[in-house]
Structures are given as C-alpha cells and as structure tokens.
Image (cartoon, rainbow, N blue to C red; front, side, top):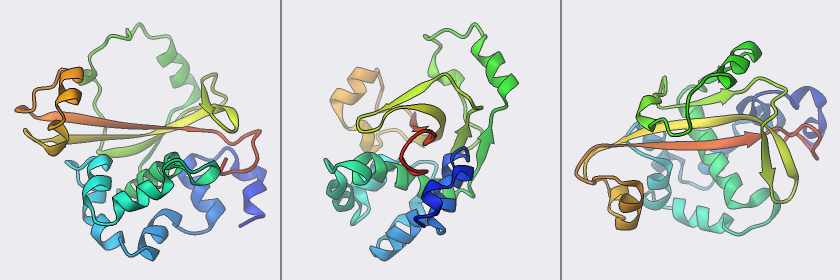
Length: 204
C-alpha cells in the first residue's frame, strides 16, 4: 500500500475510486466488519429515511467508534471517520458517481441562480451519490493541517424524514431552521472532498 500512496496516477481519480485503489480493499466496510458492527449497520446504509447522524447515534457501537475519533489529530480525526462512513454508504448503493464535464461546469458557473434559491428546488437523482467536479477547479477546500486543497467533488445524500422523526426533536435545531416537526423533512448531507494533488500522498 505504501507504494500506492505516492502513485501520481491515482492523484486525479475521484475520491471513492482513489481510496479503493490506494488501500487495495474496501477499507470502510472491512473496518466495520473487523469491529463486529457491520451487520448492525448494513440495513441502514441504503435506507432513504436514515441520515448518517441517526446511524451514529443509534446503531450499537457506532457512537463509541465516532467518539474514539473525536479530537484526534492527523489522519484519524472525526472528519476521516465521517468520510469512511459516507464511503461505506456509497459502496452499499453500488458506487454511483456523477462526473461533471469541464464545459458543463463552466456553463453552470455562468448561470443566474441566486444564493437565496430555496433548497426544495434541488433534487438528487438518488439517495446518495458522489459528484466528481471537472479539474482544474478554482474552488479550494481548507484543511487545518495540510492547507488549501483543490475542491475535487462531494458526497451528496438526501434523506426523507417522516413527521416527528427523532432528529426533529431538537427544539433549537427545528427553530433555527424553521422546521415543523409535524411535517415530513428532507435532510441533505454534503461532504466535500479536497484533491491530494501537491500534498503528502493520495489520501491527504
């Protein structure tokens, strides 16, 4: 695996493919299996009504695993844990990856869509997919340890919460977002990934 970490051919691959190529195995599900919690997690990985937050807080063993990563430095912190979880969910969905061509990305950047456009107008083609942006991309993603990275894409998940879902029980959250717990809610999870080009290795 050490040789793969510095292979320049892997640097520009979409994040889900690059991680698999560098590790040589489905690292995310292998870790969950080795910890003995994959069987408990698996039914929820493709559930369109189950956000990742619910999985972490309710599936036995998941919260302890998340807390073990909380506050850790380098390549083992909570952000890496969230990326692993989202990668496992994408794998369970069959690895849907949507690649945006450079001409389309340039056209999208020139649209007159305003920042205040209600989120209800955005609909995902499926519950979870990875959006691979065209490169080079002028957008940058900051990282506390490794600085600015070129934005290479994002995991985008959309989950339909029924009325009175447990995630809607937090009064401060529903009030801040203007949500009515008695109505269905669409939860959107967005995990942006930065390119490793110019960094220490294909996983950084």
